[in-house]
Amino acid sequence: SLPRAFHSLAVSSVVPAAAIESMEFVPSNFDARFGDATGGVILLHPAQLRREAVHGYGRLDLLGAGAMASGPLKKGAYLVAAQRGWLDAVLGMVEQVDPTLNLLMPRYYDYQAFFEYPVGARGTIAARALGAGDRIQARILDPDASELRAVTGLEVVSQFHRVDLSYRVRHGAWSFWLTPSFRFERSGSRFELTGDHAIRDDVVFSFRSEASRPVSRSVSVLVGADVEALAGEDVGVAN
Image (cartoon, rainbow, N blue to C red; front, side, top):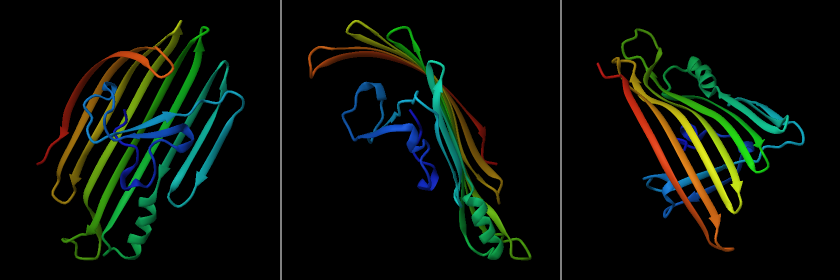
């Protein structure tokens, strides 16, 4: 699972559209694999990696820059993508003109690296690494300065990094899936004027196994098990 599908202020999606095959919103009545989530689940189905040729694109504009490339790698396939936003730098130039403006300055980045490789006649192994980071600064006029100068009143930070391994194989009518994963998350806020801050780090390790088979054209059976271990630490507290 991903902590969020979009960057702060919804300026961009965390995963580029080229890496997504489809998106599905399940408002309720979702199965147990999604744990104790409430309020619905958004399913992002990754795109099938292309093996016939190398494809890619690049982007450069006022909001930021990004690039994506995918293609074959021996018998397997890969996809790599990344983007970096610099709207805060653009708004910083506006602030230089008029430091009395109260501005929200977002900065964000994300990256993805996917790899798939066939194993045997019916198996596939996949590795995925992806992450994203956001920082929003609320800029205000410095109340203690003798001249007009903007300072950061509040800064909100959030980031996550995730690595997944996946092994799928078919044996007769049965399909089996094993997937361990590791995730690191950091979130919190800083009040620059007072020096108060609260930052929390979380490390999550999870493992899921599934076995499924069709019973008829419209009915199938799926059994699975999940294990999750969580460790958290407050690395910053209020003064």
